[in-house]
Length: 177
Image (tube, rainbow, N blue to C red; front, side, top):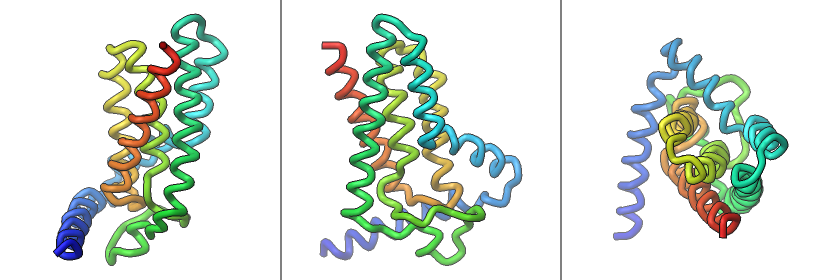
């Protein structure tokens, strides 16, 4: 019974993946998601945090430290989880999945991009709640881009969002206490 439930969930997940990935050849969406996906990449996230760290003072500086710790901690956890749960990326497992040239070949679970962007935006939103209107849509776009580009299943992205959010919350509240 449990195996059947897991199979059903996987089937639903594959349907969601295909509904998002099927627009891969739409030029405007492809350009947007190729650009926005880089926001969740390690280089962009590290540079953003370093800029805030170097130029901020007071509470914003402590928030930037929380972002740095959250990003680092979540990255370590992602690498451990990728080794514990060696899941193939959807473009390798699903017939007809569309993917960009030279795709990633490491394991799919969880999404490092989704984890990274959420691990950084959560402390910033907690510091300045009005940032939610700018940062949350950006982070959700990064997360969606990973499915659109054929690199992650929806559960990979949800796990990344959850992990990044949790590490962001923990580090922010630890830094502010």
